[in-house]
Image (cartoon, rainbow, N blue to C red; front, side):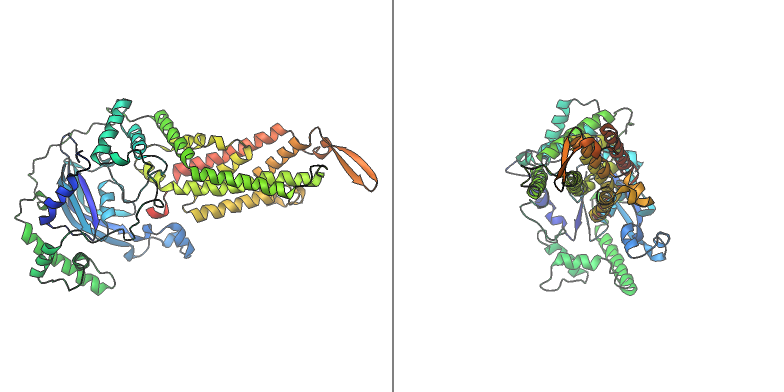
Length: 553
C-alpha cells in the first residue's frame, strides 16, 4: 500500500481514472507497478489526535544562542500544539491514498511508522493488519520513503538498492535471490533506464524546483463546482488549489482568526461528510469495524534472522570504499591541497640545495610539515562527515545497521589515507567533532580551536618549559607535539651539522640536538594512543548522540 503526502494539491474523483492510466501505463516501459503478490496488508488510523511539542523542534544550540537556559525550554502552555485532530482512514494493499494538507503530513507518516520525536499521541490508534502498531511490527512490514534524498551520490541506483538488500533481507536469501529482488524493484519503480547511473545530488540535477510543494495538478473544475455550490466560489484569476487549501487550513496569525478558521474547517468537513457518507468507497468508511481483513501472521525476528554484525561490516566496508574512490572531485581536491602545500614549502626553502639548512631552519621545516598538513585534513573530514550525517541518522533510526559495524567500516574504509600517524590523529579528531556537534559550523569552529591549541602547545612556538600548567597538560595530548619530536629524531639522528661562529666552524653531532628527546618508538606509541583515544570518543558519540542534521530538526 502506498501513502502519498501532497502539499496543496487537489485531485478530484473524476480525475482518478486518468491519473491511474498516466501512472500505470507507459509506452517506454512495459513493467508493472505494485507487483506485490503476498497477502493483503491493511493500515487503519482511528480517531488519531496528536500534539507537537514546539520546543523540541528548536535545536538546543539555537536556544543557547538566544540565551535560553535548558530548564525553561519546555515550559509554557503554548509549547504543545495540536497537529492532528480526529483523523480516520483505512487503506489496503494495492490502493493509493493521498493526504492533502499544508503541514503535519510528515508528522503523520512519522506517527504511523513509530518514529515520531518531539510529539505525543493524545488518543487514537494506528492499526496494522488488525494489530496495534509497534516498532517491531512497523519494521517488519512498512517502508517509509522520506521526502529528502538520503543517498550516497557516488553509487548507482542498482548498487544503492543492492546494498540495502544485503542489509535488510534475511540470511536465508542467496545472492542471486537478492539480485532478483533488486531487479524486481527496479522494474516496479521503472528505473531500468537509469539503473546504472549514479544517484548524484542536488547540485547536478537537470532541473531544480524552487517550490517543493507545487499546487497545480490537472483541471480543478469539479472542485470549483463543489465549493461554489456550498457557498465558497473561487475568485477570478486565483489558483483554485491554493485558494481552497487556504480556505480549509487553520490561520494562526491570531487567536480570533485561529478559532474562526477552525470553525469553518469543521463546518466544511461536516458538509463534505454528508456528501460522501453513502459512497461505496471504503476510504470514507473509517468507522466500519466489520471489514473483512486478511491478517498476516507476523513472524518473530528469530524465524527470519537479518544479517549479523560481520555481514553488515563487510557490506558497509564495500560501500564505503566504493563511495570514497568514486568521489573524484574530493580526491582531486585532496591531491591539490597536498601538492600546493608541498610547492609552498619548497618555494620557501628554495635555493638551499648547495648549503645545508641550519638547525633552526630544519626544525622549523619539520614543525610546519607536521602541523600544516593535518590542518587541511581536519576541515575536509568534518565537511564530508556532515554531508553524510543525514543518511547516517536515518539508517540508524531505521535500524538498517548498528553503530559498531559502521564505525569499523568507516575507519578501515578510509585507512589508505591514514598512512601517516599524525594524519591518523587529525582524522580521528575531526571524526569525533563531526559526530559530537550537530552542525558543520560548530564542528569546524571547535575543531579549529582544539587544533590551534595543539599547535601552540606543540613545543616550537612556545618552549614547553615556559608553558603554565593548563597548556602544559594539553600539550601531552597534542599530536602536533609528538609528531614534531618524532620528526626531529628521524632527521637529526646520525647526522652532523656545522655551526659557524665568526671564523670558527664547529661540528655538531645530531645526537646533541636530540639529547633531551626520548626514542622514536615511544613517540610513535604516543601518537597511536592519542589516535585510538579520539577514535573511542568518536565511537561513543555515534553510540549515544543522535546524528541529526539541520534538516531533521
